[in-house]
Image: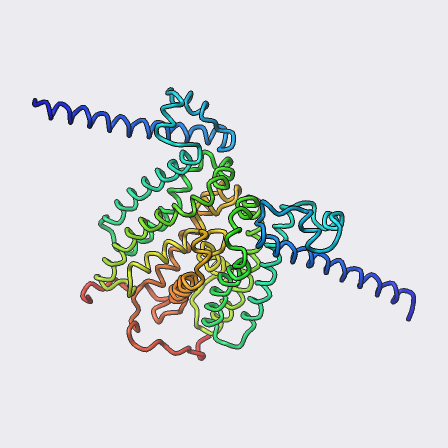
Length: 226
Length: 226
């Protein structure tokens, strides 16, 4: 083994270790959000929970707000991974779109379910910065939706002239069901949320489907039928 | 004029005066939110702005949070009035639904546009209670949408089996475009928002329209068309 290979091995392991520590710290945040909530969580608690020094945490995260935001980013990264799996899956474009819509809502719900009672102070504290980050999250999700819309259009199933902007519509239309927009009571009721998003997915898919009359002049209102 | 008529006149005038004072106070809130923002607005500023004593404000509103919430409630009441006018209007159900969707987004936007830069601290401060109140707001809006959906179904234009729950879908799907969910940058861009909600309204209307194949077995995927 050359010296360069040896050194690059050392560097790779160091990077892996750093990534591990970041993840361990965020795991600790997750536990403490459930136990104390955001307002009462301190850096001391977190250092004790993870079993490292407070200084090490500050090496990775400048403060509590960044910890909370990184924690939310990580949830969305994991969700994106899941969406990529579905969008590359073998079922029909309709089924993929439906599964992705339901997943983007329920995955987030499930990720915060163990501290749903403590979620409000977290979301109020980081609200402004989170709104900005969410634009990036939504952008990444829209990319995955656009791929499937494109596939559905190629198959002649969907009538969406612009898959990019249609993907954004799908994102916007389900955004109000994300934890950010739910009351404490709604955050306790997974079944209700699942029903909501499934119904909405159904309506949106109806809107997406190609009709026989598409690309001809729109059908006149038919007053003879009751 | 009898004594009873005289007294009821006095009482009516007093009630009207009380309602006026409430409205005047909320007008003052609107001005001060633009000038100072929620955090820096004080009851002293408000009393001076309205030209009444601080005590009179406390007679009507227990505190700053209630003032902010009543201010938001008033915006939604005015919006509801507008939605009722549209829903009772003479145009087709499709056009009414479209106008109502666009209005529920842009009316709120326009109501806060003059203090959009100061909106975030207000919404963060009352976030939890506002989430709860919004359920009531949305419920009232859904009622107006349901009327038009019902009319459209009777005319054979819409295929919505349950106008009540479909109305809620329309509400949920546009909720992410309300000021509560917009970044400061987005709150500055009315044209973009109008385009968004118009596109979404188009997709939702496509989903609502009755199709020739409705109530027969769903069309098979057609792989021969490109």
